[in-house]
Length: 202
Image (cartoon, rainbow, N blue to C red; front, side):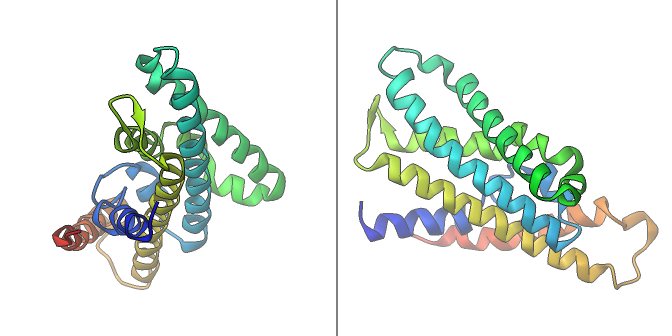
């Protein structure tokens, strides 16, 4: 593990291959929850927690259970089980701490279970940090760090989107363009702007 590799993971996960704006994973919560900054930030925190937890746990499951017993074909279903458990945990915590925030999330909090961004990161960690069935040196730390960075990239995209949509509430917008149509246009422009980072070379 060295600083250059960590910096590469950070820049790649947050900017170059942003989970929402470059990989196009997790778009349902991105469009639905990004109307206001506070719920967007709370959802980002919840998604980051689930991504980091699942990155760590799925690495352990793959390394100490699936690989030794030749059960790698069960990777997807076991990862989904880990993610579902993490989401249930955070759902119970939010319901206990802030019922108002829990109601604001509505159906989108349980939908983190099937948020392809979370599963995508877990699978990406295994594909990147296991080569020919053997772990790369420091792969556990890389997996957790990549989970944190992907969560930061998700948060960045959510805050950008919610900030723009909040400002647009002060504008006069044609009825046909309100809400989702305009949100998709904004998302497309943001995605195009993030394409500029793809020219970075390491």
